[in-house]
Image (cartoon, rainbow, N blue to C red; front, side, top):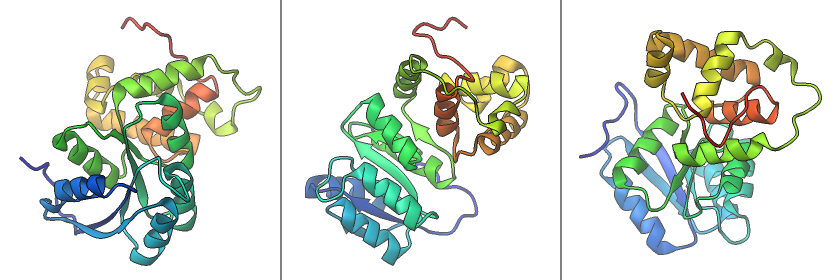
Length: 231
């Protein structure tokens, strides 16, 4: 069963970039059944992907990490700088926290493994198109735990200092991979209240989504991640 498209939304345009034709055909096949998503181009390397985003003006660019001429990470940064309206989702075989960190720093909004189910892939696409982030929860926690061991900057950014105690609490739960609904249940507040807190956190930290907010918070020492968390 296809993932339901967002209500009252026009057609989305997407491009696919992967140097393996087999992968491109598979990704295209998963998206072609979606009535509101049009594949407007394919690229075989990162440089072509950057040019295609400039020419075709897609809403979403789906990129592999390992590509010739310009890899997916460099292409992501170039696309976000050149075509900031384009959201980028990385689809890769590498379950690697270091790659995830580099992808987020480059501006990617999604990181999906190639062995994901069609349902998971489409869920990721929908979330990224809605302006949200999608990253495998376990991989996010691995990344944040790894960052905990890195030295924090001597002085946090002023915007980060303005986080309230409740926002820091919400941010800690976001870093654990919890959804807004799960955070609401834990804090005994409504989902809309949690959403408002998350929006404030994203704005104060100067990032584009909740996953990047969690990474920024750990890097700045605002929250910590322990290998074993008992909640």
